[in-house]
Amino acid sequence: MRSLAQSQTSQAIGVILSGAGTDGTHGLQAIKEQGGITLAQLSTTATFSSMPQSAINAGCVDFIGSPQQIAEELTRMSHHPYLRQVQVVDADEDKAIPQVRGRPAQKMSAGFSRFCVYCAAGRR
Image 1 (tube, rainbow, N blue to C red):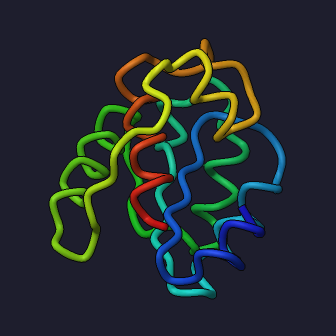
Image 2: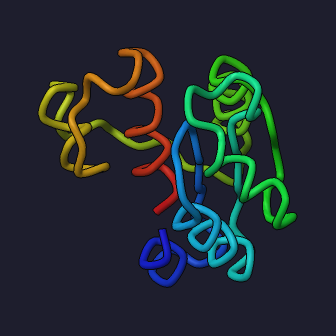
């Protein structure tokens, strides 16, 4: 996320879902320092809550909610005129998600995964 913050500055959007450790917190802090937008999963809805809770405790999260609420907020934000529409280059989710996240696509629900690809591309 730090490289995202450096390259996209105020146009970066960072989302932390279930996870452990503090790397995500440092990434969201970098995004906030550049004026970007940050979201984190409500720790009571996360399988592993230490990463989202760390970011929440650090005060660097703009929106806190369940994965469903985060998806709804990202959808709401995507309609803002500040964001431009983007065409999906690779609509094959099995290929697109690992390219964006560097992790297997099975970790996220299909609809949310596809939307995250859209948001990552749309903020550029």
